Image 1 (tube, one colour):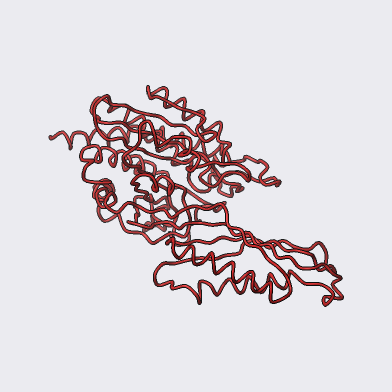
Image 2 (cartoon, rainbow, N blue to C red):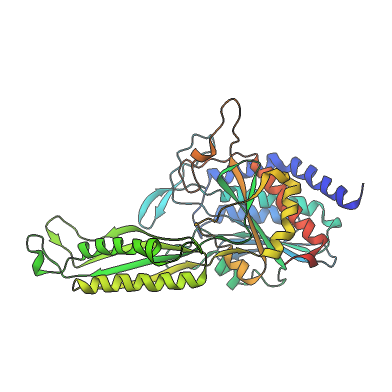
Length: 424
């Protein structure tokens, strides 16, 4: 048995031995979810585990982030592996013995808290990979940086957070990674399967905030004022023509959506102002800038035509998640070996965003998706087209996916260590 095959066998055996522990960690985190920039309990568990493995550990990065460094003591590449830790303000509706019962206050409202996007899985998997790699330290060449990141879902209003703040506080320095790998569990893809996409894989995201300023009046005398509600309705309809009629969607997909309209207090008062909130998703920076300009023009000119004024703000921006193409081409055979060639496929572009994109702006990165929807069976399995999506209160994880997640990250790391010059 050659060294490469022996190492591969060791990795798979070690991962299998860790599976029960990883599942237990995941269930614990699932039962005790924490919102963005508040991942105190999670971070404490992670830091304690990394210290027990003998890693150099840094805590308090970007508020609650944890970074562990495994140094083999031998020359080689620096590889970063990232897991996000935060949960969502969602009340769980899945009947599990470890279902979340947590409640908290979010944006002034009492809400449930749930790992409805699978970040509990990501943390548990990376903890398992850290233990696996620490056990192979004598056989490694190079260093591995384990990044446990808070606030991927976005920091609370008025706070910084997430990947951008981790980078700002030096997570990609001392030492600087050559590459970064990350995974995301994904509903609608069957457990046992892996999806990836070279180049642009997930959309950029911009939050739109529109304020329409009219003039308040009695609802019985609308001609004595300027009605911002009617104008806002016209703006919502006008915005729909940007994607459907003004940009070439054969080049890249795009989305413009309004998700909230706020204005008025009672039936017979036309208010002074209306506020609208929405989102823009694109896969190309030129198209992104063009759509921003068209939104401003549409909003301002419709308001002006009715005697009102309107302002548009874009914030909470996230860049496109772009998988480095040479790195992706280099690492896909690893995924095919781990999962089976027939179970690894090129997925569609996803209009959701992911702040892993900030790391990819600095170093080559590869981000992929591990299926967590229970497999269909002859006895009647779950139809993956009907599975609850990420962010749903009915989001459900087939925990067999955790072993594949652990094995895939570990093999990607080892294969890149074996031939770093061929990628990145």
